[in-house]
Length: 220
Image (cartoon, rainbow, N blue to C red; front, side):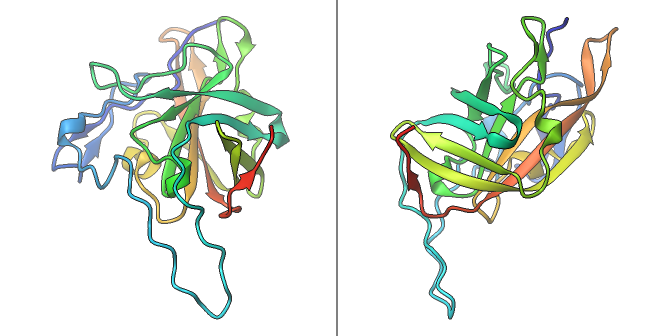
């Protein structure tokens, strides 16, 4: 059994958020917030509704600042509590203390405001073995994910990509930065576990885009 950190990213902003270097495998994400361009990484503002076209597209739901509460991935049996996390005093991304919880990072977008909401969870744990994202590697394109707010509002997403990166050269700004489409990004460990360093050598990144731009009221 083993404990480990779910992320292996260390960021240094070299030109005001334009160039990001990665190092220190199996360390959480280092973000010197004072140096990072807020328009590139921190919570983006909601886009204006698109102009009408010949084929009417549903408008983005109005902003809703209710707390992010749960994430569900029906295809792999995930129904998890969300914990709100940020960066610690050393500038590293915080990680959930419980293996069955999922972190939503408050320096990324809230699902209600479009752009990219970033989540992370453990793949396994010394406490229980397989953890909340143990089966995330089984998710494929077209699979659905739901994110629910505390007031019952639920947003639906469809997986558009699953990508594995080496922990030493993952494109962090692309992973956690803003997106044009309303999206969510899920992060967990993958690859080979090194019993000497107690680290995984890869990170699994799942990206999904909103398929229910009109929020659905849920009683769950």
